[in-house]
Amino acid sequence: MIALKTLKELCLMREAGRIAAGALAEAGRAVEPGVSTAEIERTAKKYIEKRGAYPTFLNYGGFPSAICVSVNNEVIHGIPSKKRVIKEGDIVSIDLGATLEGFIGDNAATFAAGKLSPEAKRLSDTTKEALHIGLKAAVAGGRVGDIGFQISKFCKGKGYGVVREYVGHGVGKNLHEDPQVPNFGTAGRGTRLLPGMTIAVEPMINQGTGDIVDRVDGFTVVTRDGKLSAHFEHTIAITKDGYDILTMV
Image 1 (cartoon, rainbow, N blue to C red):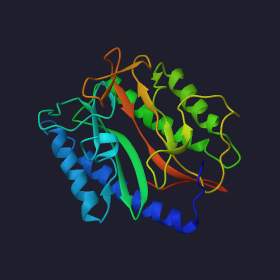
Image 2: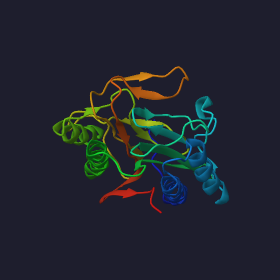
Image 3: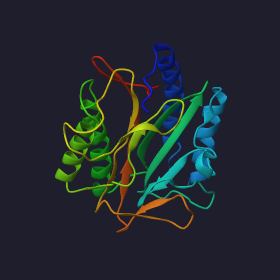
Image 4: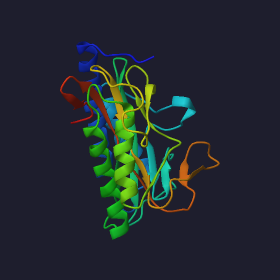
């Protein structure tokens, strides 16, 4: 069931989103060669808790960390570790949420560790652009399929693979709510977008094919062909005039 948010609830989600966005920016600044992914997690967790919020991902579905840190061919759900040290040229995708007074802000971005190869930079830049292309399709009266259609069309046109097994989603009091928001679809099909809906749009785009596999840790998802992956995400509210990004500092 889709829960349309009241103005008061949207205000709370905006506050949660602001904290999540600030934590993501802090974590991104911590991405440097020689830094462990555990250090990046500590930076984000400290930021969230200092502002009176809770790191949404911690213990969610048994996930053992406050944020996800996925490096290079890791698509999503990378578990931070003291042993995983960032190297020059890595691309690092960070996904995190903040829960404040029962409402959640969820966002993600891919960051560069030092100087990226032209191929890695192109993938990251394309995925970020795909997010904003998808957001432009998130308008009241439109359909969920419009978002995925635009993302997929753009990324496939650049020669990239679109992950299909994991998708965007509704977000509010719960991290994952209806409706699902795939990064593929048919224009004019799917759930109708209505003012008051809050959704997370999050393209996960691979340098090679869209095929993925799960690692034995039970959480980390990697590209099947070992090529790079990038991930960007915003939580937005559908308004009568378009959309409003809630995960902004």
